Image (cartoon, rainbow, N blue to C red; front, side, top):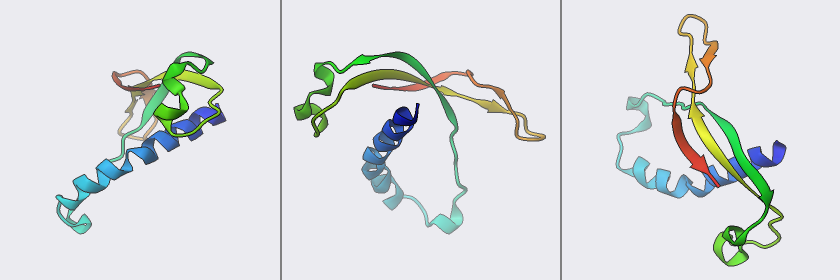
Length: 95
């Protein structure tokens, strides 16, 4: 599971360039409210790496495994912040 967390962080870091471009067109941070999205991951499949993980495609070699995960939105209780639903809606996927 630790490897999955590192993979998710690496994927999110790879997407940060697009987020930077979006921030440049938005108002200064002092006028914005921070948005935090909490998602859960559901492992749909895992196994040996396929051609999807070829070095030419992902930019590094030695991939030994490949997984497919679904990202699920969550719901919390407003009164105390407790999570009350971990599977509200599918909001994305990672391969």
